[in-house]
Image 1 (tube, rainbow, N blue to C red):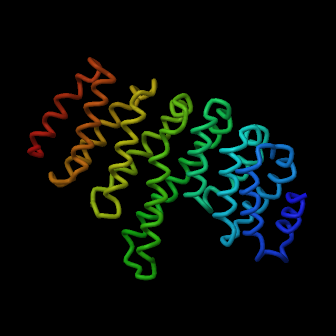
Image 2: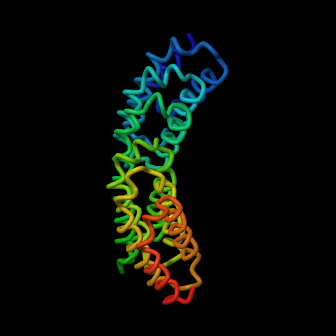
Length: 277
């Protein structure tokens, strides 16, 4: 009876001021009532509709509620994966940080069982990275004083979180999309005018690049990665901490490729001497 009353209030737009209280009640029931699964067919559809509406007043509470369902009711996540992922596809550019956090939780618990859904989700994450990166870079280079520096920082943070969580995807999914991932990570790591806003993003992009070295198709991208990182190395100040990340990347690639990495060693040695590292 409690679920019926909560839903009755939740779907009534005239009672919007009470929606947060309803969501708190739903979260309490999900967390403390072990037999909530029978109520999920009537609960999840209105939750998805509210999330698609992107009401800033309710957004955090709605995502908390869905996250709790993912954690405490695995059967609901598996049975209602289609509407949940449909919602994520729609709101990823509206609430990127919350979507990335939710995807991380889903991957942690259901990576193998929801492989096909996550396969279709990765291109959306890559699109988010590219879009946020481009807008942040344009804002940073703009002399328009109307563009808030805080907005640029927010975009950089969105890009950083999405890049950081890329390795959460299954290796087979990453492998199939590596032709998109490697160029995107190299573009993201190639801000040669290092500023406090972009330095951490560069580091995260290079570390994420290290995490995909073990993908079976990475070998095809070796030349592209080495030459781009060497170009970045030549444009950085020696004291930059990113230099260490680049050298570590070369070491990881060398370990992965063994003798096949030999043609690049002389190029790297010359770059190290040239930059007095």
